Image (cartoon, rainbow, N blue to C red; front, side, top):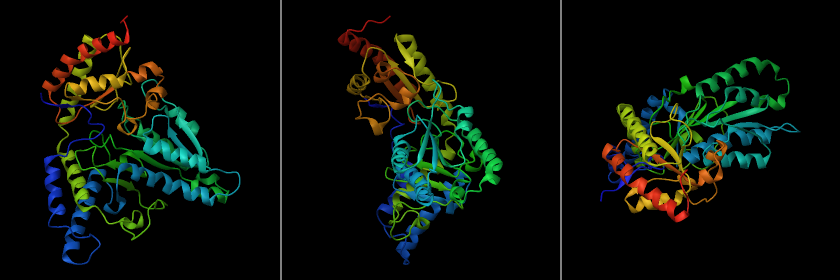
Length: 407
């Protein structure tokens, strides 16, 4: 029985082209990129070549790309690197203000919580039942002490795509209309709110031109785009007053000390290059997702789509199966050789209802019965057919065990 992998939002397999790009730097070209001899020069060239590839993809300058050990580290660098200095520099009763949303990934959610404990003021924007931020809510949340806006571009659990361009325009308009009103020197650091987006799930499918998006910081990950684990990157717009989290030898423009992971960086660069060459995959993936959704609706009763098919990523489908625990479905499918997820991989061991689904107004019962199917470029129609063949029987059996009767 061939295994079927439908958990691409958790991690992706390493593309053969990426492995090939990495192999040289895992063996013969093992030098330290900071060394001046020929071994170091070869490694440095690989690092800078990848930096150029990512810069071309994001339409920014190579020096605006900072390599990190993960996307989590990249987002932490953006959030702590901007907000902590403002907490330390602002005296009195004025607190630096952060705007985020109620459906962020934990790599953004947790740093914001920590900064709240350290003295920052937080606004968690609500979302609609489909998972979208309202521009009117965002505009109301902006204040003269807003230091940072940090939002997810496309959600990792339901695939909802946020109106990043509209939010950036609202920030720009706010900056222009309020810049003349900053007479209090304590607020000078927050005169222009900075804008960070988590684009980890978006990079494979959406336009990530940072100029069009209007962002100051953008996080991306290697292992979500058929690249290696243990590598991420942060776009940092020139002139941003960001401070490092890690100190040492001053690598990555002083923002991320530590010897660069040359092989992983080479892999990330190749993975980005492959995205630019693989946009034709998007239509195929969306077609398979729609087939899966229609097949579930046709063959299984009492199911609920979490989020919406409109304005969402082409590969993520989140469904609640009423009367059944998501973990039981996941394990039953795994016994059939089919890998899915109950939500974010980072929260896989957390038995609490998904904070994303709860923010959408999904009931705790329906949240516990949710499964995230996430497709990728290697997903085939035959695999979707196989899932649709075995899933109805699994749900029926589990509902019998639970004593649930369909309406």
